[in-house]
Each structure stands twice: as C-alpha cells, then as structure tokens.
Image (cartoon, rainbow, N blue to C red):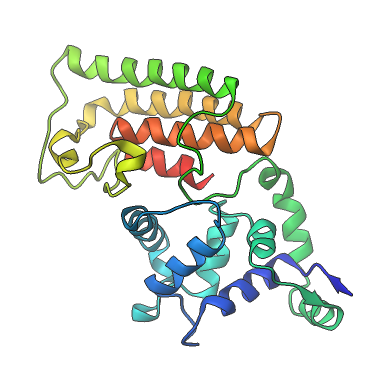
Length: 259
C-alpha cells in the first residue's frame, strides 16, 4: 500500500529523479527534462524551453550553485512561488511513496504538512503549467471574454504612450523595467525574427500607467482562477499569456504561462 508523502518530501523525490549526475543541482539539461516530463500534453519548442529556463535561473539566481544548477532549496522555492503544482507533478511522474518512506519523510520534515495547509487554499485554484498550451485555439466561451477585455487593456496602455509619442524601439534595450527577454515560440506569438525591432522601452515617467495595467491584468487573472473547472482556468491563463506575448509583454506573459 502506498500513501502520499509530505510536500517537501515530494519535491525532494522529484529533485533526485532529475539530478542525473548526483551533484546536488539541476543544470539546464536536467531542468529541461523536468519541465517536459511534468507537462506531457505540452509540445515545447526549443525557444520555449530556453525562455523558461532563462527565467527560472534568473529569478532564483541565489539558489544556483555554479555549473551544478538549481539546488533542492531552489526547486522547493519555485513550488512555493507557484511555478508548479507539487501534487500534479508528482503524479505526472508516477512517483509513489511506500508506507515506510512516508513515515521517514514525515519525521524529516515535520512542518511540511503545516506548510502545505498554509498554501493549500492559494494553490487550489492554480493550474500547474510552466508554459504553453495543448490547444491552438480558445476552448471555452468565457475565455473569449477575457481576451476581449485584455485587448482593451493593452490598447488603452499603448494609446497613452502613443498619444505623446513616448514609446520607442531600442535594439539594444535590456528591458530592465517592464519586459523580460523574448524567446517564446512562433506558435505562441507569430514569427519571432524581428521582435527585437518592435520591442517597446517604457520610459520611467510612465511607470504609473504600467502599474495600473498590471493591477487590472491581475483582475483578469483572478477571473481565470475562478473558472468553473481546472481546464477552463488553464485555457484562460494560457490564452492571456499568448495575447500578452503577441504584444511584446514578455514578463507578464510568462507569469500567465507559469500559473
């Protein structure tokens, strides 16, 4: 008979399964294998995988141990931050605990159950996908409403800048304010060959407009979270991500893909 282990113990098992060289870290190749394995329905392109890994290694830089890669504590933090669903990933990998292992795990991490309960309500509504969508089109009618409202928000944001001629393209732009680096696939955002020429650099004095946009975007994400099913929530977040990507809002697109 098998039982479900504690949350941190599950992350540890996932970590060890992909730490192929047993050096205590997940390098880019090992992390890539993890991302693909826990998302069997998603067909990732190399660009998507690269963008995901770039964001993970940049966001959790303090948990990167040189060439070894992301440490166990770093992987645990990604789950704490909502980058994945521990239970879903654990089940997707077909990992099971024996009764003996569960007892040992509970002794080693006595606070894991308390931690899981604390974040349980927040995790419950999240769809556990790092990025991408198994569907090319929109599946649910309610998702179309999200798209329409999001297009209005984006158009409003850009019109405020265009009105005063503030946005500008910058091929050397490091995107340190509103955007992260590009790299998502053509399937998610159209041809990517010239995206750097179209990328917008937001001026410092326009940060208020962008803050308002992010707040309103958060309301749309909450609507997606409140969908009638996990499948509809998944559809909503993936489509929101696609629309944001098409408008060069790469950082916010990644947030949606990771929900």
